[in-house]
Length: 249
Image 1 (cartoon, rainbow, N blue to C red):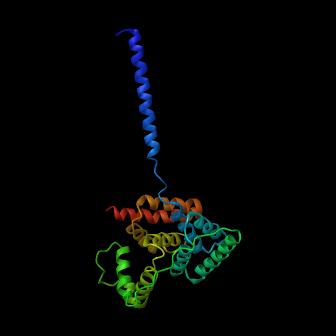
Image 2 (cartoon, rainbow, N blue to C red):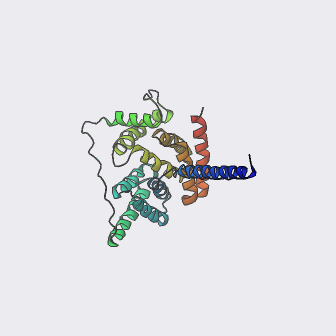
Image 3 (cartoon, helix red, strand yellow):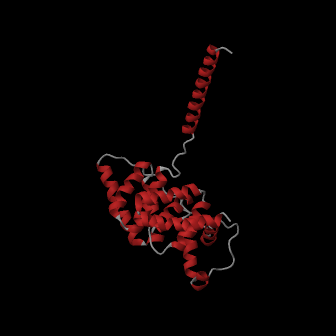
């Protein structure tokens, strides 16, 4: 091989390698993952978290972000209504008041937010106890509805009735939100409260049983850390670590 031929060969190799590297870089860029939680899901997290803490000054911009992300007025109303079961009527009513004021302000500015669908009527003959028991079992990842009562169910049966017939039937059966959206709102509210680690443990698992992934749960913690409260995010991370460890065994 002559020196001239060798030079052309080297140039060809460099050119080919350059094209391959560029293609690989393009493929790597094309494979860049999207955020684990989309804009609407992240808005649900902050809306629920600030509803739970009663921080209406931070809730209002979170509500605005939710509308801007494409959540409908009725979807956000439904989040705030559901949260009374976890945060109490005062927090829920205060949040609804803040949301009402916000929608009026946006309307006055000419912003037309989508109203969204209303909840479908529930069947008149619906067995709310059976429906709620099935939903709770599904959220817990149980194929069969447990027949053995937990201590709290034996001690106070009426609270179990309320959980099944009201929370997991009357509320969860309303089709304005999916069960996944409801669980995302629930873990966000519980994560921004104190003394609710046991409930958060259950609902982290429930959220994943609705289809949310471990990656999305880690993104959930990141949203809490960046947009809500670093200490609460750290506490929620400790609970999530236990949930993921249990699910991996």
